[in-house]
Structures are given as C-alpha cells and as structure tokens.
Length: 343
Image (cartoon, rainbow, N blue to C red; front, side, top):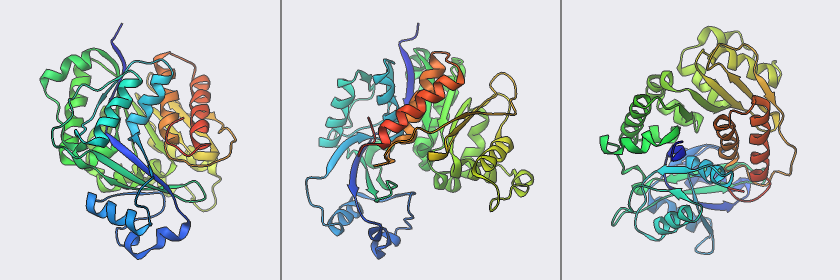
C-alpha cells in the first residue's frame, strides 16, 4: 500500500475573494490588464494592491488557502485520502497560514517555507451571476524544482495530479516535465487539469507536447474546444455547427474529436452536466453523462476542483463511472452553494 493516494503538483496560492458588481469588470484599469470575465490574468503584487485600493478595500477581506490542485487535495483529504502537495510557499504570513492549514487537514507539504519568499495570491472578483474572474500574483509559488532526490515521493504515491496553470511559467513547466518523467518511471497514472482556455491558448505548444503522456484529463467546454483547436482537429471542428447544435450535441462532437485510446477524458459543462469518456483500456464512442445537481449558485470558484476530487476519489476506489460522476457532481454543488472555493 502506498503512503499517498494522491501526489499533487500546483501553485500554492492564497485566495483573496471579493464580491463585485458587473460594472467593476469594465473599469479601464481592469480592461487595460486584458481582463475578460471568467478568465485569469497574471499581475504583480503592486498591481494587486492598486486594484484592492481601486475597489475601496483596505482590510477585512477574506484570505484563504487556495490554488486549483490544492483545493482538490483538500476535498480528497475530507474523503479520507492521503495527500502530498508539491508547491512552494514563502515564510511570510500568507505562507505560514497556508502551511498550517494543510498540516491541520493532514496534507503533507514536503518543501520547507522559502526564507524571505513572498507567497502567491489570487484576487478573485465574483459577480452577482456567481462567475469568478481571477488576477493571480504568483510570487514565489513558481520557485520550485524537482530532482532525482524527490523520486521517493513518486514511488510512495498512487496517482499524480497536475494543474495546467503551471505551464504558464518556464520554471514550473520544467518541473512538470520532470514530474511526468518520474511518474512514468514508477508507472504512476498522470492526471492533468487544463485549468483555463487562455492558459491553453498561450501555451499551445507545451500542451501539445505533454498531452500524449496524460492518462486522465479534466476540461470544461471552453478548454475542450481550445484543445481541439490547438491539436489541429480542424476537420472535426468544421463539421460542428456551433450556432445551431444543442449543448449536448456540441459536447459530444467535441469529445469525439478529442477522444483517444488510453485517455480518460472528463468534460464538465456547468449546469449542463458533465461527460466521461473512459478510453483507458479500449476506445469508447459514447460517454457516460452525469447530470448536474440543482442548487443555488452563490460562487463558482473551486467547483471544478471539487468535481475533480470526486472523480479522482472514484478512480482510486475503482468505482463505476456513474457513481464517481455523481459524487463529483455532489461535491461541486456543495462548493457553488457557498462563498468559498472549498466546502
């Protein structure tokens, strides 16, 4: 039996979550950043503080440990899974709080706090429709590398889970390549979250390089369409009527275009449910459909992370697809019904 059920590789980011009205997103200072609703851009610490001042927020905003893979591990820990998180934290107040929070839920963080490091943060603006728009300050979260001395962590883990956001930075991209190499050395399945369609667009070549090594892939509808584009499934895309197709037909066509033998493809579509193509052993043509659970939507931040926890938990327990999908949908519904990235 392995020491860790899941080894997660991701940004150690603290969330600064603020409710705003739709008009804030049209402010010239925000549009100048190239910020579009529902997307993510990178900003430095100075710019983050300027935006907080612009919003009239000087104190008393909530800061909670976050990050995509980290959120998934937190949910898995609640489900009783043993988790190890590879990410870098500074020894500042944010980093210390983050490290302690993970220790309190029995998630191992093998890297020591970086002396003098400024921990990463993500400013999340949540509009009344519960959509989140993100501005990320990476800080020292990109300052980590993997070497042969870290191989024992991989040998002690059952499954590797990587967030696509890491492919935005050359240093963490190198770490991802090394992690994939070590996972393959110990025959460990590799799961990847595509993270964001703009991340794919900005880093298409890296995604094309690494996707053949991925066994389990999490995408939403925008990310799936973008991956079909960057992987040059042009013939398949031309056959899709994006204006007239029903939502389910659109997802099915995109999934068929991207599906391949050896891949477990999980495509989420918010209130429209989700689709599971498990072609790890043999190519499947029809996905298992998972209906979304109706609930009051307060904040969509972290919904995909919680959903991923349900799927990964099901994979570890060898659960039937319908059962793992239902658990994933249940976890996601718990997150979106409250103002938090975790339930």
